[in-house]
Amino acid sequence: MEYVYGALLLNAAGKPIDEKGLTGVLTAAGFAPDAARVKGLLASLEGVNLTEVLAKAETFSAPAPAAAAPSDKKDAKGEKKEEEKKEEKGVSEEEAAEGLSALFG
Image 1: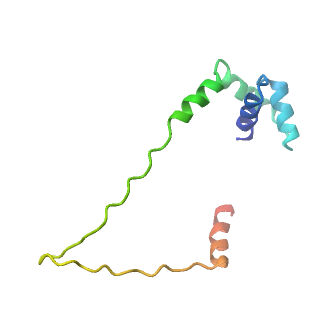
Image 2: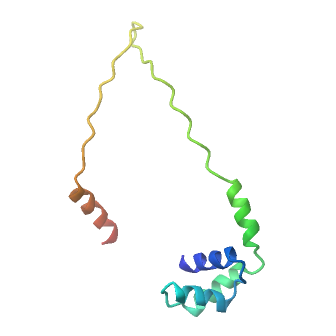
Image 3: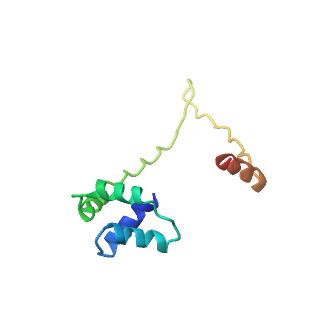
């Protein structure tokens, strides 16, 4: 992913996306770039105008979620039902940290 970010950074700076530039960006960011991955990314970006691709991507945004309609639930007699409120179970910081540790092994 850092290789793609490096290419996007070069594009945003108006610099050519080439092996030297991408390797320099990755090295400056503290990565040890793999020459094969750099060449692979450059080969996949050959002939691609990132500025146009990014401009098109900005026009495709996710639609806003629809607003929930107010609920007027009525029973068979036409009387309004009262909904029971469920208590939210609070999670302690320790429990949250335990859950996160499962993601990282």
